[in-house]
Each structure stands twice: as structure tokens, then as C-alpha cells.
Amino acid sequence: MAEKKKSIEENLQRLDEIIEKLSGEDATLTDSIKNYTEGVGIIKECQESLEQVEKQIIELTKETSDEEQDK
Picture (spheres, rainbow, N blue to C red):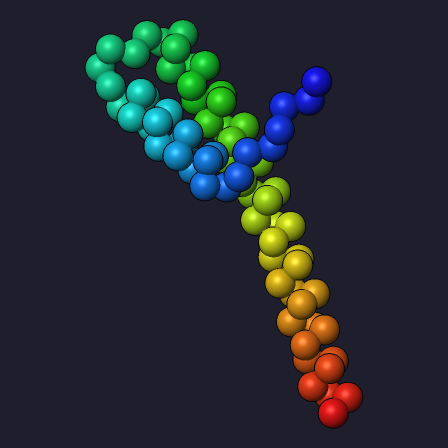
């Protein structure tokens, strides 16, 4: 079954955790690469989510503007 897409807030929280792990002195190189890779994936997911939200805002703004012009 496909994994449920996480919210931006959940992804940002996970990124904070990853940054903390990467900043720690105990991390092995293998773990650091694994965490870094996960972080890059999360960033891409956040960017896609933000692009969708931006498109929605542009569309809503356009609709509102069109409604105002019709009055």
C-alpha cells in the first residue's frame, strides 16, 4: 500500500530531526548519507506541495479578481 503523503509541517519537523542528527558528532558516514538523502527527498516533496499551494492561491486570486470586475 502507498505511504500517505505527509503534511508540510510534518516534513519540516522531520527535516529538523535530520539536521540535528547530521550536526551530531556520533553520526557515521553511512548514516549521514542516508539522512542527507532522506532530507533531499523531503525538500523536494515540500517544494512540490508549495508549488501546488501557490497555483491554488493564484487561481483563487484570479477568480476573486474576475468576480470584482464583473460587479
